[in-house]
Structures are given as structure tokens and as C-alpha cells.
Length: 112
Image 1 (cartoon, one colour):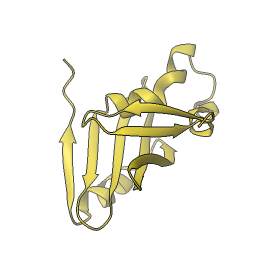
Image 2 (tube, one colour):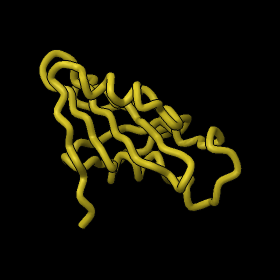
Image 3 (cartoon, rainbow, N blue to C red):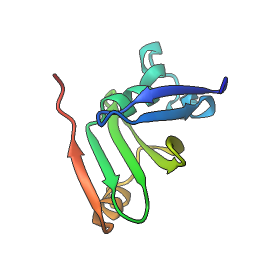
Image 4 (tube, one colour):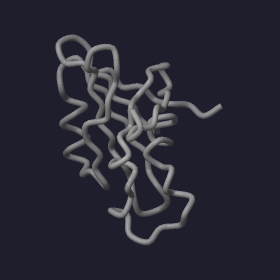
């Protein structure tokens, strides 16, 4: 797929990141080094939320600089994980709602 980038998450899942999710114009005029952040959020999230059981979804959360954070949602379709949502600066209520869902495992990523 030409319009996707493949990124590997901390659990070894290959995640397809469609190019339209890599557009960080939602962050305004940020430094150029943040433009690879959607892939960095997936590769090294500060927090990963893994749904188990019925719904196979993963969410990745990480801050970008001092003023922004990204929440990226993926869904397993067939044998692939595909990004289906990306939200800039999700509210604490949104994060809590995901964490309170049934069958969610929280995974803290530790930098090596």
C-alpha cells in the first residue's frame, strides 16, 4: 500500500498508518522534528491501552512537546492492525472512558 507506513508497536504488532493520519497540521506551526510523531506515538507510547476479548483495538497515547498530546486508535482487521483514529489533546474524560472499558489492559512503555 503506497499510502501507508508500517510501524511496529512495543508488542511487535505491525500497524498500518495511512498517510492522511501523518498530517500534523492540527498541531499548528510546530518544529519539523514533530512531523514523525504519529509513528513515534505507536513505536514508543507513554501509555498503551489494549482491548482484549470481543473488540480487538489498541490505543496509543503520548505527549508531543509541551502543549500537545496524541491519542491514536487502531483496530485489527484480518491479520493487520490499522489506524482508524487520531485525536489531538484528548480530554482526561476520554482517556478515562477508554480505561474504564471492560477487558482493557494498560501497558506502560518503558524507554530503554
